[in-house]
Image (cartoon, rainbow, N blue to C red; front, side):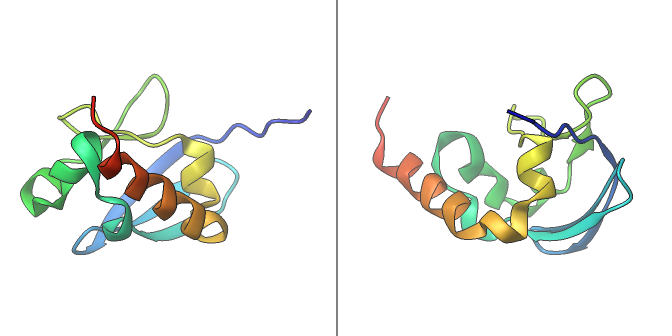
Length: 98
């Protein structure tokens, strides 16, 4: 199995809950996170002030937020082709009680 590893190099806030994300392989994605902001981890990111505190973790090279939310760089890289699956997974988080 060939697993591709990506690093987030840069991002820019381009709208409410939207980021343009650049990767180490020269590609970029414009991502609208609003459909996946559900559950205990991602739900708080609906607060735009918290969402805009996004940073790049220097060790794992992905987007992270102060509340501990993050996304796998490969998921970010392939976001637009997997958006429906990502949204369904996020909605399931609302249904799970811990």
